[in-house]
Image (spheres, helix red, strand yellow):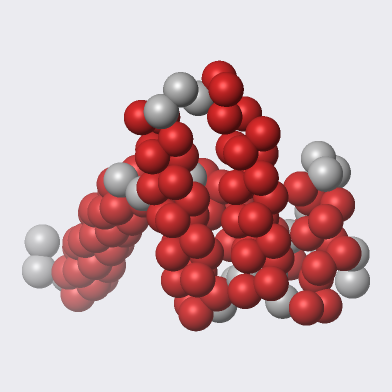
Length: 127
């Protein structure tokens, strides 16, 4: 088994397996990091739907973290009697996201998205 083909094939197979393993490990790291944040699924959906850059993602994370903290503060009080206040806080944070996260040319699409209509991500928009 001193054929050059065999050794090249073995090297290629080893490199493929190493790349596959590192990809799996990196994907686990990303998923586990996102699980600890509030509204991680919402964040990932917005990031994909509106193709957000890193600065806008950081703004979104900050707003969602603040929103989670205010919800937790409300939970400590009687939440049933505070339903209108909870709705008000939700609308304020949605407006912050619209202003500071979503690019201006996508505000109309965001309004449709929060209204329950699907937003087209950059990968499945018609050309």
